Image (tube, rainbow, N blue to C red):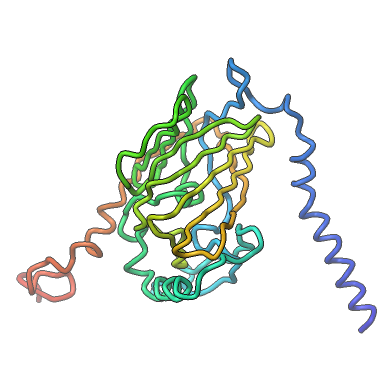
Length: 280
């Protein structure tokens, strides 16, 4: 047993070392490796995507049955190490109860199921690419999911006109890091498929830090006194899509959600499962 425990401990140390290798490699990337614009700022132009299971659940989680059991393994939840710094979201007790209720009703109540705009920061780590268009002035971001877009205002701080699904983004540069403050979110989005959520009081501060020619360290700090006992942060790498034909494709998901959203408006006897004229 002692030998076995020593072996397991040794393997744990080796595994931890292997996990650190990408971090060490990123830390060794020099500023010269980062593409830059004519004014010396990091060039973030390109198509980016995450490679994690954060959209299933931001917190660490095991593999589990999906919201629709009839889909079998196709709809199963992939396991994930989590992207929350510290591991756990600091919910207030009543908000934690609401998160649990959201999870129980995720099949129909998750805004993603209804093809609503994903909001921020969720738009960043959904399993779809997004494209950054960086100009000499402001930055425009287009997301493949549901055709969502946003502008990050850099030249001057722009006042918030109205709350919306994607909120309002004002940014600034701190060295090589693009810092973006997102406010005016409408509070109707979720943060993932596990029911994690925020209200319209949410304030998100994003940080985009290039760590090489094809990688960005993305961090977002979320503050909402109606839901959380303190601000908390997520962190993950963004990967540049480097295939020669990389591009955003059209993904208008409304047709896939029409039955869920409007099925209750069907006339009696005409629904797909109710029978009607033409049935034998």
